Length: 93
Figure 1 (cartoon, rainbow, N blue to C red):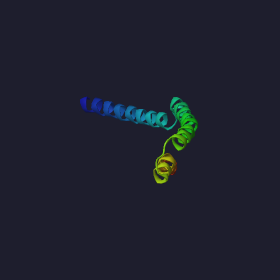
Figure 2 (figure 1 turned 120 degrees about the vertical axis):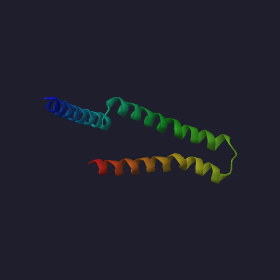
Figure 3 (figure 1 turned 45 degrees about the horizontal axis):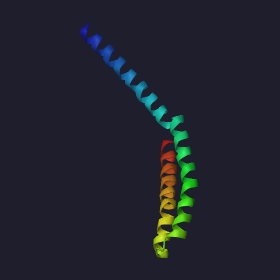
């Protein structure tokens, strides 16, 4: 009877851990607060970044390559992020 009990509890543990993992995965896929946060962050970046660029362009006398590299840095990062997200989406999907 002890072995049977042990089997029962190990089975219970396995199923509960599986459901826990499943819940974790589902939660990780679509947390609504994270989406809101990311949208807000993106919006802020979209507004603040061009303003910053404009100010940099007007008020600094840095050489053109430096200005261009600063201007294109977030764009490349964004492209990399998007590419990564698409890759991840295809892997998950």
